[in-house]
View (cartoon, rainbow, N blue to C red):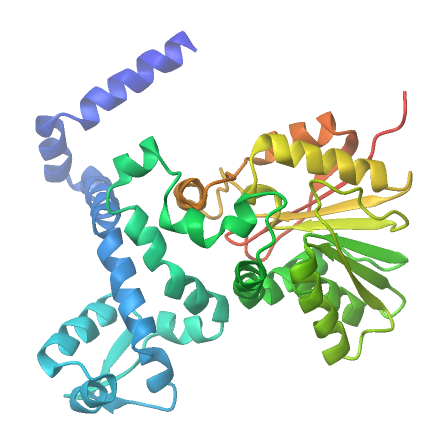
Length: 369
């Protein structure tokens, strides 16, 4: 550790030296490194502006307006009720970010990232409520010193407070999560087959998106969703709407305060742990362990910190969840340790198509000593 510290200190001094920086820029074989670092620092500096360009595009429904084909600046300005001079600044900025692209002398069409956003409805849903996060981050030091009155914590009181079940708030949170949950469900179930399993208990399963997808993929499976009563209603409605009410059931309760239903041979926690602090996570994991059969399987889907395939995810969730009032992204090693402390063993990470959204783990009950 002493040698590593010395080497890193030397590195920091060199990288912080203007003379060294200029010499690297002048030397052809190292110039690309300096340029890349400068670009990365610029992207961090400009990131807030990038996010506001995306937010403005979403609020003006530009991606939907251009879905049918190109339109001129004047047509878009009239449709968006924004002066053409101002709108063209947004259009040009969005084109720089590949959200839009120019078409002819005065036309615009979707860029590759703008088109891709239409295939991920959860992106627009998250962007539309991010004004609360931007409001909190307007003074980041004030937020870090006191998050008790943050805009996000008031909006997501349902997620942050065990036992809190205000109906409108709970439904709003669950509906937002459902926007992206179909992609998460596909990823998790593509990497963890439930073939041969009899019953799934989806704890904190929200409006039932994951459980419904599991029922469609595995015809012999039954499923129960366990969530706050206001939210369980939404899952029951989904099962009825999709013709799954004979195999899917919704149960109301509090996963932190109530004993979890027994009998399932697989229990899932899909994007649950990162929303809560360590004490609540340990309480939940121990409750899952008590409810689990000896041959049961725990299935976890989580966004995680220290995800090499998705750098920056941890930075985003650290600040978002701080503003929300609870939770944090955790590394695989930390989650493994928490699982083992709660009585699980044989923790395995499976594959993932989108590690940005979810990484997939399984664990089994540890043998009694």
